[in-house]
Each structure stands twice: as C-alpha cells, then as structure tokens.
Amino acid sequence: MLSAKDWLVRMKEGDESAFTSIYRHYHPPLYYYILRFCKIPSLAEDLVHDVFMKVWEIRERIDPELPFSGYIYRIARNHVFKTLQKIATDRSLREQLLQQLHVRESEQPEQIAQAREYDRLFHEALDRMPRQRLNVFRLCRQEGRSYDEAAAILGISRNAVKKHMVLGMRFIHDYVFRYGDVICALYLTSKNFF
Image 1 (cartoon, rainbow, N blue to C red):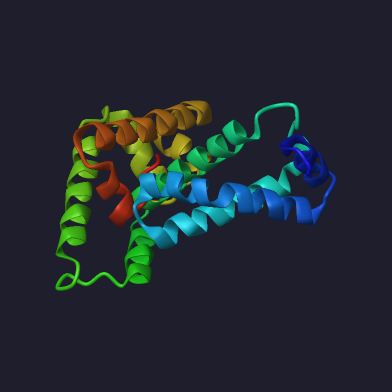
Image 2: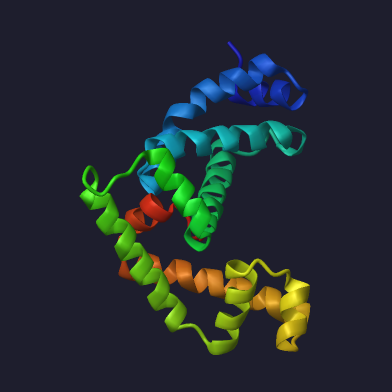
C-alpha cells in the first residue's frame, strides 16, 4: 500500500489515479471544513471542487516532504474567504446565489433575515471606514473602476489605492465577523471577503 508521500509524488508527476485517491481521502473532511464557513451545502461542494482543481493545477509545486493536509486546508480557507469577499461586495453575485438557492421570503424567512442583517453590518462597516478608503472602495468595488482609474480620480498613487482596498476589505471582514453572524454573511452574501 502506498504512503501519503507516494501518492503525492505520483500526483505531482501527473498520475490522475493518484489525484483521484487524494481527492477521495480529503473530500469529506474538506467539505465539512468549508461548510462550517459557508453553511450552504451546494456552495461548499462547489468550493471543494475549486480547491481540488487548484491542487491539480499547481501539483508540480507541491512538496511531498511537507504535510499536505495543512497545505490543502490553507488553500481551502483562502479560497472560501476570497469567494465570500466577492459575494459580499458584488450585489449581482449575491442575487445569483440567492436565485441558485431558490430563496423565497415565504419559504425562507430566517435566511432573508440573515441577508438583511448582513447588509446592515456591511453598510455599518462602510460608514466606519476612513473617507479616502471608502472612496477607493466605492470606485473599485461598487463602480468597477480599475486601480489606475481610481488613482487618477482621487489624485493618489496606484499603490495607495491598492493599500486602501486591502485595508478596506480586511476592515469589512473583521467588522462583520466581530459584530455579526458570519454564517449570515456567508449565507446570503456568501461573499464579503473576506
């Protein structure tokens, strides 16, 4: 029987059966790990699939000498947070997620309440941001401007715009996690990240 290291070496060399074995071994615990963050089974399954696609794409960079579980869970966590961040700041993505979940007010009052709570926290976080950071966030995330366009409009450097975006996203994430139900943030907006 092959060791975990042997499976990783074979996967790294492009062996699809080794990848399948790794997938079967890590899929269940990874699914439940991601589900703890997002609380939406279908979204969790999609995110698990994305994580394994990423693993396959970067397999040549995997070091079989290092613990693979820490590596794959780190990829999963980062992907979940990025996805949630995207959902939280993009109204159309939130609406798409809601349509996929077939959420209707009469059928899912708890989820509707969670979505409203998330929106409230999101807007509270925006209200507490420094003015320049809020301006950058609105231009880049809500109006879809590039960093260069935002820099020109605000009369600041592209690096300053990037720094404001990083700090702004982190602030929103921290605020929602500190003052609200993260699951709510994930569930209906499955996104702000965060």
